[in-house]
Image (cartoon, rainbow over all chains, first blue to last red; front, side, top):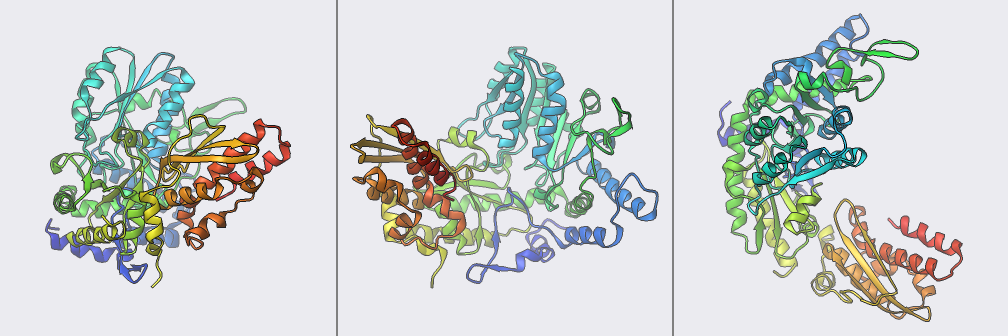
Length: 414
Length: 147
């Protein structure tokens, strides 16, 4: 597939939801992809096919269906390994999403390893899911949570990291590869290099990055990596946690139950092999199959093409939105340093009012704090409006958005 | 044509631009703060109470046009009222004043946050100033279940 505008427009036909109209017979302009993405027929069909033809529990029974279900489930693990370059499939754990992945690490790694006085470092532009689990852990352990600050350009101030590392008490540095509000792409390699030199582990929240750019875990060299299926054309309720084997081996189980055990006796239990030790209970088999289909779909287009398409859209959107009088865009305008996530405020109009008025034009944007209240405090705003793009968005979508802002200006007499 | 955007009529926009009773009362007799966790709207209400009457009321905080307009209207309704009358203020007293009776469900919390804060301020005051705990509990429950 070519990375031209027309080939991307061509794949819109795979997404049935893009055909529908909303409100007063307006075409849906879906610009909330940082929140969740729409699903192509290929993913929907894979889930339906699984339930219609292969449904059985995995890893247990010996009959034909169970074998097919297990094969479908496990083949997604291999697709993931291939997609983000993981050498050892045993390091891949299926979870509900990025939030569960990070909580799993905070619980199963954090509880045995974090002691009084230890420091965990996160950043000012994290999603709540990469702040709250660490607050819970550090409060329980009488440890400390510290932050890497952000400059006015929406980029991390790595001097802060140096200061924290110099204390010698940092056990983990955790950060998102792409901000869900500003779209800033984190200089992960530099952070990991500094942490490695200090013997500190690193966790990357890849929820916003994996759907939009080529990610190579072997090359990055972090210790933990998490991402979600539903932000990359896959179903909700399925995500991935990857942990480097030597670290994974030091972790205690997360949930106890079926499938995670080797032998259970009245008073003691031995654990199953990796990764099953961390996958207790019947997993979300159908959605794992759906995620596999999403990875196939994205791989066919190619992640570099997707990134190129989004750079083009982001450039166009920044250009057009910058022309709107009274509109302020947060974060860097350098598209090589950001993904297709644009947060803005329009004069003194509250983002909820902006979102409601443009909803009448069929436009879906997010308004609010985007689960990043620490960042909102840093930006000194209560909320922003956010438009975020994906493969099926077009320059026309951005034109509709920009035009709709005229209505907002009219209503609020700007 | 009636649409959801029609809620942004003159009065709402004016109130949001020029909120009434906006600010703080330094020597307040009671103050209360609350926020809507999902949208981030956040309102404080300060009240001055003499002889079981609200002699002054001010609000401050951040919110959308709906939230700001409703807070303004609510403080206008409340000012000068006896505590007994404040107890009886209902959702529709605020909503009808601004023609928001049919506000969609996702925005109702914007409109009613200030009423929730007002009722909470009231039970906080009453709890401190000898009121039967039954009344306080009733108000608490009303505030908690407002939307």
